[in-house]
Image (cartoon, rainbow, N blue to C red; front, side):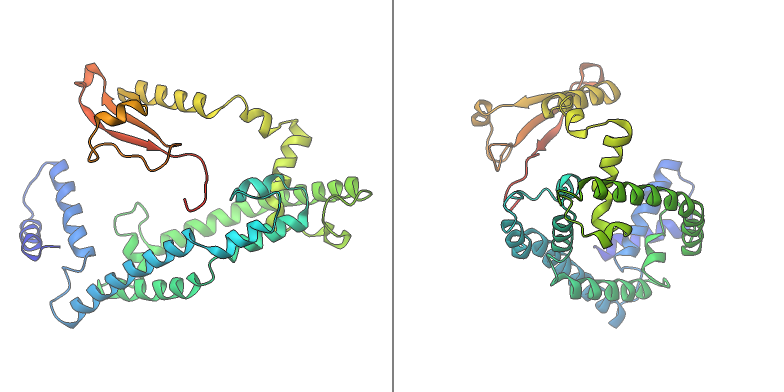
Length: 305
């Protein structure tokens, strides 16, 4: 960021000029953005080190995301499950009856990018070092600078209070799910379709939660999420969403089909897959009818997405 522009903004802040609330808010945010980027650090070794840390953090983030997007370990694992060809991780945990298979899916998913572990550790250390160079005690204190939470002590106390209040409720819900698991295993034991050995009937695992939470809806409330979703097809849900935004914000959505694409230059509208939906967004006539931008919708899963 520009040093000369920071000096100008910093001088205005220090003069404490009387500004309208909107201008003062913008000035404070701009000034804080300069400080967060290290321009408040005296020029020298500390400033250079902070710049180096920011570069390393960006490189770590790029490598981290690349690993997630190109994970061969998870793709190879999915190929070993004949019925699990697409990466519907949450869907599988909710509907696969076999506890053993759910375990394999959960553990395989969680271990798909082990090369990111050292990157995460290094990121934590670099964030802490950068925060201390900026004058904070730690990264958490730095992140709370513009948040509603007053301090890290406030956040800790808030989370502790929530834990104390919700733990008894969570215990009751967990006991209910565990009882449901015992009943479910008992009802399927004769055919051995559950995939859970008898000694595991008294233990509730991470990969059990989605399945038995969904089963609670089916057994207790006769609610079938698959049948329920039939009433909310993609087209109908998208239409309802656009209608709601039109009423709330005075917007108009116009779908651009394949034929009109030829009328746009490559600098305007480009799609990367036939399944993609492109909408142009306009203000309604009451608000001036100006063009606002394009909305790209790409809903369906596929390899390398």
